[in-house]
Image (cartoon, rainbow over all chains, first blue to last red; front, side):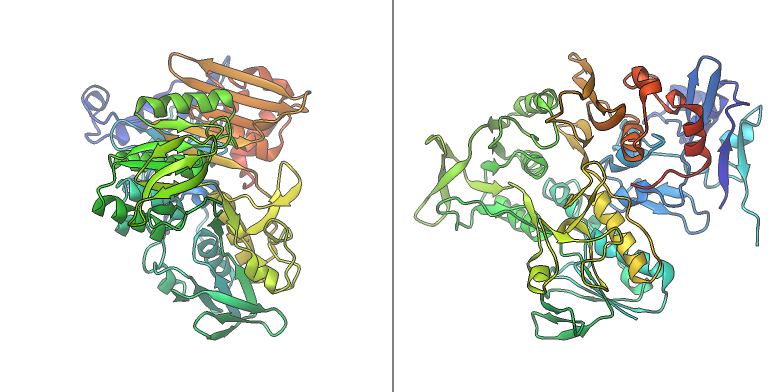
Length: 149
Length: 426
C-alpha cells in the first residue's frame, strides 16, 4: 500500500507541513480565513516534533493492523477500500478517545471546538498527493507508492 | 467448513472479519439472544443520554452480515454444547452442527444481594434492552431522583446519562472513592469534584442493604448498610460484570474466572474457541490468564480466534486493563497497574490544580507498567504503547511527563523501528 515516509535527517523544522495541512482541512482552504476566521478552528493533522537539532513531522501511519480500528467502539474508524487509508467517519465518532488511547504514535488528536471528534490524517483523500508531501521543501516527507502488480 | 459463533458483539464481528480474511466460502452462522442485528454495547449510555439515536447504535452497517455471507439467528439462546459430536442445541430446540465453534457470550451483570430487589424500579445496565427499558421508565414515570449502586465506569456513565435526562443522581459506592479499580485517589478526586459541581450526590464506604417499597411495588426508599435511608424513584445496580461461562462449564470446558483459552484463543477442547468478556486470556502485565472486559481486547481476541478457526495460525499478544472515558467533560485515560504498587516501584507525577490536570506514570524495573491521564490525554497512546512493548525507559525517563514528550524522546533505534516498521498490536 502507499505510505508516507518521514526522514528526520532532512527535516528542517520549518513547519510548512503543519500550515498546509491545516489549510487543506479548513472549510475555505484559504490560509488567512483558515487561521483568522473559521469556526470551528481547523486543526493540523500532522505533528512536528522538535528537540535540539532533531526534528520530524509525524502523521497517521495507516498501520496495516491498526490498533485504532480494533479500539473504535462506534464503528467510526474504518479502512478505505480503495486507498487502504484508515479514516474516521466524523458523523459516527462519539469522542470516546479509545483511538487516542491505543495509537502508539500519538497521532490521533481531539478536535473539540464544535462537535467533539477524533482528528487524524486522511492522506488528503481528494488530492493527487498529500499536501504535506507536496509542499515539503526538503523531501523530508515523501510518498512511497506501492508498485502496481 | 461450518463456523458457528455464539454471541454477536465485537468479538463475533471481529471473528467474522478474521475468518473472511482467509476463507471466503465457509458457512458462518451467528446466534444472538438479543433482537438487534448489531449494536455497540458501550454506546448504551450515549443512547440513554440521547447523544446517539437508536438507529446509530450499530458499529457495522446493516449489509455487513450479507456481504460476509453470515447467517444471523436472533432471539435464541445456546442451551447446550456437545463438544464430541460437535453440535449446539438452541433454546428453540434446533440443533446446529459445527466444525469450529467460537463462544463469545460476553458477560452478565453481577446480581446484588439486596433485600426486596424484585421491584420493577430496579435496573441493571449492560445491554441495549436494559437502556431502552430504563429510558422508557424514566419518561413515563417522570422520574426525578435516581440512585446508582456502584461508582465504577458503568455506574458513572449511567450517572452522566441520567443527569443529561434531568434526573438527580446519588451514587453509592462500597470503596472509599469512585473508579477505585483504575484510578488512584488524586484522579478519583478530580472526577468526584466535577460530579459534585453538577449536583451529583456521592455516598462512599457504603452499600444498599434493603429496598422499602410502596404498596404498588415501586421503590420508596433505600436502606443503606449504615442504616441511613435514601429517597429515590429508581435504582440502577452497576457493581460489575461476570463472564458468561456456564454454557462452557456444562460442556466440560476448562474455566477459571472465565473460559480458559491458549494464545490462539482455543479452549482446552480442539476446534472450540472463546473470545471477549467471557474468555480468560493472557494478561500481558500480570502474565496470568484472566478476563479483561474491554472493547479493544475483545476485538483483538475475536480477530485472532477467527484467523485460527480459518486455519491461519495467529498468536494473541495479550492485553492489559485500560480505559478511555470522558466524564463530566473531563477526558481520562488509564492503563496497566496504577494502584497497589510495590515498594520499589517509582512514580512520576504531574498535577496542575488550577487546570485540574493530573498525569501519573508508574515505573517498575525501568519499564512503564501503568499510567493515568486526567484532563489532558493528548498523546496518551505513546505511554500505552511503551507499556505494551515493555520498553526500557531508563534513558529518557526524565522526559516522560515533560510537555514536549514524544517520539523524539525515544532512543533513535526504537523510534525508527516504530516509524518505519509497524507497531506491534495490542
